[in-house]
Image (tube, rainbow, N blue to C red):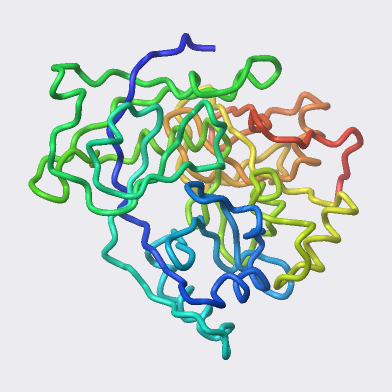
Length: 339
């Protein structure tokens, strides 16, 4: 594993995200009955993943959810936000709740950052990542004030995402080098934000954190497929929600065969959507890619077959190793299926 690098980066603007706010005295009650996240376990100042499912248990929308005064905030892909707000309106019925689309909101992310105080916004801990990574979501317009690092004359340094990973062991290969974050040249609201999301993508890959549109197709994946059961994004104790019966059955029977894994290539990986093959059989698909690292939505039984047989696993012409994310609680099946 690479040696930890004691450095930070400034918040990175996420241009492809938007917000939907749900407020009102019955907002939480109606949401608790339809989404996968257990809102009773959602604390102020933290953010959790979740999804709105089809009745068949597949992910229709995936999002990040956090509390605001008088309601809840959904953070999701910009191109899905309007449809999500409309879908919530259909489910709201007579509930006393207001749903509003905030398309112009500023959303950024930082980790191991010592300059949060220079941003006049709401700072939320992203619980998809371990505490030591200190991954923060920033909501609101950034202040044009220079960061404390700039004021002290310090330079931005390369950040190694491997320094944010838990211990070593068998999952040590799940590391990735993060390039320094370039600064966004501009005035006012854009000041101090990174123009390039490469470092953020690399950090997500290092921790096996998948997002809809980048790593899986909506309406095609179950929560278990994309590890929502591993990151607090689906509750099996809170009671009914849309698609709950199918998802609970997968949980109790242990029938999840697809999972998001971390792919490491012996060269730079090909693009998102590239099939991953072993012995002429497709075992998965590449999602987000950063250099020779990427996320893969893969059939873990087929991956196990290939590993046991010593069959090379390929993404295009690149040989890849597929590893379980460092904080995941699942493993490769002891006995694989060939279906």
